Image (tube, rainbow, N blue to C red; front, side, top):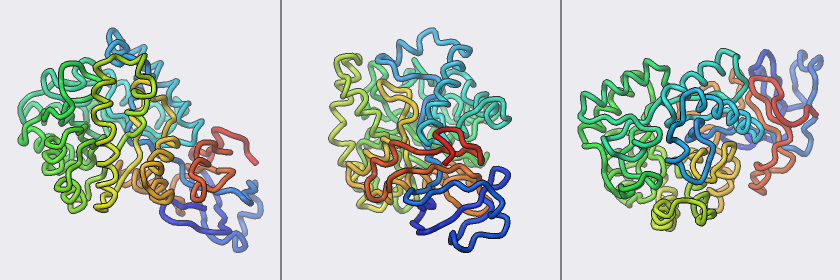
Length: 386
């Protein structure tokens, strides 16, 4: 068993009322386990459900993101979000963080899942992403705000709508026309106000940050995670390590665009190609510096389907991370970043969000791509009970 942090052999887990009631040596299972339905896991590996820290539930991964967003009503966006929830569960992803959508759709979806109205992974919603006037995302998921006071008010509005995380767009982006990825967006004062207000409410603050200047500015402002981080300098990596800032690399976003370059708008392909090698180098630089990583896919962007966290884990290994650290990034690390202590590890008292794999992902990371069984709050939601 991989418990989210380390490996335990010949382990047993007792699930009761949706939570993990006991974890220990299988031979020493408590008396109440004898009357329970037993799932035979010999030769298999049990792990916590995976966590995707960066998705866009309102979007489905079409070739032109701006075109998909144009005229997308909240009602239609909600229908897309509901369908996308199931795609995550099927692949062993039991918690997601939405980092920007249409209106308050993600917040309402999160509430519906929590209340049992909808089946799906746990959803940590951010509401709308905050961006400067004309900044990245203003044509899709963004709420345009300028000035520290306006940023604070916008954070409060997202909290009022039900957000449990805040996203600040600190640089330009690949999928917005007319703005370079290395463009630094918010001022230091604006970023600091957004981070401070998020923290006042006890919420993590994420920065969309691709360019070097915006990354350094966001880390200096106290951001909790750098999303994308394609141009992490040695100085930024050192500061991220010192401050405990997470890196969420979203490798799948770049791959989706470049692998389908003929179908994606040329401006986006050009920008993605321009940062692809830098993104890999930045990931490795952060890794060497001891920066902690969390798994995030940017699902919903071009040819980047929902449920892709297992593939993102594989890609992190391809870029130089050990299987153990990649799995930690998608479980314990991700739960810590999102401030959801009830998930991310297999421990007594925690939610029984579990995945059973036929193979051993610590030996062959591709095993994460085909879960044999997925459990959410103690109920089997994908695969077959064994």
